Amino acid sequence: MARKLNRPRKGASRTPSGIVTLLIGTRKGAFVLKSDRARRAWTLAGPHFLGHIVNHVVLDPRDGKTLLCAARAGHLGPTVFRSTDAGRSWKEAQRPPAFPKAAPGAKGLVVEHVFWLTPGHAAEPGVWYAGVSPPGLFRSEDGGLTWEGVEGFNAHPLRKTWLLGEQEQTTPDGAILHSINVDPRDSRHLYIANSPGGTFESQDRGASWRPLNRGVAADFLPVKDPEYGQDAHCVRLHPLAPDRLYQQNHCGLYRLDRPGEKWERIGEAMPKAIGDIGFPVVLHPRDPETLWVFPMDGGTVWPRVSPGGKPAAYVSRNGGRTWKRQDEGLPAKQGWFTVKRQAMCADARDPVGVYFGTTGGEVWMGASEGERWSCIARHLPEIYSVEAA
Amino acid sequence: MKVSIPSQLRDYTGGSAQVEARGATLAELLADLEQRYPGIRFRMIDEQDAIRRHIKIFVNQHLAHNLNAALAANDEVVIVGALSGG
Image 1 (cartoon, each protein chain N blue to C red):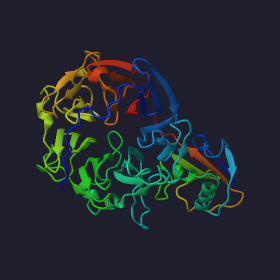
Image 2: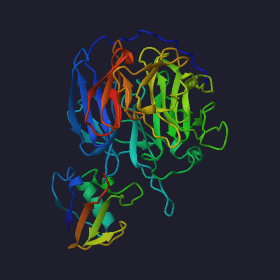
Image 3: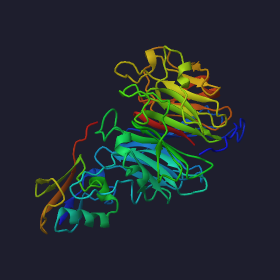
């Protein structure tokens, strides 16, 4: 369906000052890192849910105080914790995401972990979406208290085909549904991504879905230009230009301008020695032409660390046509960072601060839109997610 | 009957390591526990009614493999958070 392309509104809704709060999910709990107004001094609080594997902590931008936390413990099943007072107190969801009970004799799906959380449309307060492993989409209409499966995807007759079969837990924690994007113009219009499986679109609030993967490579499959099965690592829709999507994939970095159907490999413009493989892609909150990535080594056995042990972000200011390396302040050598798909973000300040967390438990801030990096927290557990609030 | 609760689940029981619950089967016992301590069952038992990988339930010191195990009023039920790696 064609929608009017919103022209970039560069400079809109700037936030010139204010405290930045980073919500950090780790393998051993959640932490909160809060700045002063200048973003020079940072104070770490936590852990919350010590010992829990926390995949994602997200603030509801619609009320500025509801937080959801996707967690599980090593021994216990997955759940969602919910705070309505900005994290001072937490309650567990009454009905966490769970697949339907299978018919007798049939093998049913079991949620292994809740991986991704996305607040719903601004006009639908209380609506949230969750992506889980094995890949499944869930929706809450009461602020995360109770969750129902989006059966249009979860029970789709082609779901298993799209996802290249049901996978047992693999590297690092099994197949996942992630990157849930809600079109700010239309609450019914959703994008999701699967790793593996690719990107999918729904125009009817999740009742029906279709693959949206043309132009995206899947070098690990024997089929050239498959309709589905790609390994999307992170897909982001720009809130001010919702027809602009960026995708960091297992096989390259892409842009899609709707109503177009074919992704363009903007990673071709990255230096060949670095490549265009990574987990996260981060968008500038006010400029749809600006995005950051954090390349990783996707060669041979997929080390998934900074190429050559020289970590760097790359920024594009023109929608991916050209890229600039940003490594000032980062280790010049022997820096073997892995930055997971939810572990890089930007704040809404002017100039924007860019942040990433590493699997080695460090949080880095890129001041002046990534021009100068400094480590603002260390000695944390393995970091899975960093969200700026 | 008395049910031993592992440390991982004591947030649900107000810190109690041992609680009372009723049921003629393990399934009924877990339903009773859920009624008394909302949320506790799903952390131990998945949506297909299987005991989660790193939870073990012993009835009179015998490992239960599913929820059909019959229980008597004086049985001892011990729930264990089994080793789950690092």
